[in-house]
Image (tube, rainbow, N blue to C red; front, top):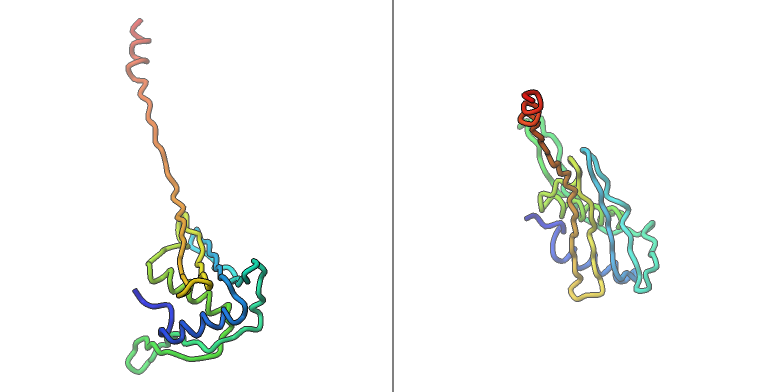
Length: 154
């Protein structure tokens, strides 16, 4: 399984930033079905369940990008380090964890759930809760052949 964090040091620094901002827990919700889905705007709560504004919060983060190289005629992956909004990083982490577990959360009946980060625990607990929608079909068949034939024979 691939790691949604560039490395252990970046992971610790990022989680420490969330704590320094007064964060107690992070919730990132997602919901999908019918070949589409969305990851909601991440929310950071303080210890009293008040929202902490993430609007201007940024952090230096490493992301994997790819581009097509026409020389060897193949896709080339590279890692870029850039200053990114904290909310975007949390969304990317959620998406990476969903992909790492091969969860097809946006197709068919879809899945929904949350990524939860409990910053008050040591080390911070990161868990993914997924609920899968499954449409079921119950088939019934009734045979009236015998009852119709017996009615005609009377």
